Length: 209
Length: 209
DNA sequence: GTCTATAACCTGATAGAC
DNA sequence: GTCTATCAGGTTATAGAC
Figure 1 (cartoon, each protein chain N blue to C red):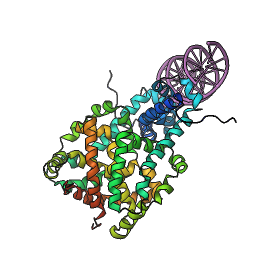
Figure 2: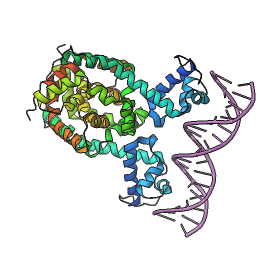
Figure 3: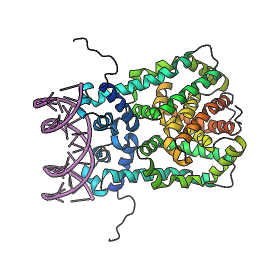
């Protein structure tokens, strides 16, 4: 019960966490062996259990931090009640793509783990509440429901899909287009400008049928 | 070397394959245990090795069949030189969404396994060649390159993202929107009409910046 | 062809020396 | 705190009876 120094950068503890993040994000929970993490960190396997009691505990930490990192990076934008929807889209797309260029495996990682255990993570983090109440979602609901007569989720799915899908399908995209790392990133940069324009189209297209 | 009856529906062999397809698609290679497959098929574990030498061999078969099933379902549409691009899009979206409503885990499964081993599967199946030469891709290149002055891959990514992303993010989408199975499928049906309209917008949007 | 039993291996976790 | 050695449990694969 003594008050330990639970500060950050215990050096080795932090190194193991970084290694864990890298491997977990790359391969997912099931395909990751604790030995991979230890090796990546440059330490012995036993250290992993010394600092974090188990593979699962370590994973939970990584997952939580990753989700929070992402949510934090977009929350202010989503909640701002001053900016118009179109402005918000531009900001959001830019911020989001920046994060993903630095962490390309993030979306797949999250989707992969949420899929295995639909409620555990979502409920633990309360993603729904945190997002559903943002001013942004209200604005979407307004436009989609009243003006466009379609389900607001249609808009959200397009927004997310346009931003996230290229990163999820990155290996295929790179292969099909003969794109190296830089070329891929250049395409993503180009999308920062394009997606808001396309979405503007989506938001002004009546469902004429 | 005797010529065996390698026909279909060896009954048990086929049952094991069906069970394997179900479990592999649901959980991915790493998270699947051969016991799960055997149990799902209603047979003993040893049978799996009797018919298919190993877990990996069985998996390869499932993967190959799944990819081929998908490619086959859209190839005629993509190759038809008579239909316009817009017509092709309408047909493609409808066909594709139909396949996915029946096999919602398919895209995630494929992306997940391609990610683990970028070249093995892609090269084995020759996805690139099979798609790159279709008339459809030519048409896209035409419009994107000449009229829109953007990378053709931008169009492909939007098309694929709009169709596929909702299925990849299905658990999240259902949770965020409080959607049961039927409600989700209804949204996907709605998208059959919406996506071609949105894409028409994409294909007529100059990169004004 | 199908099953039971077991081998061979792998992985997460711990005990104990340093 | 860090390492070596090892255990305990689970998983794939095979041998052999039926």
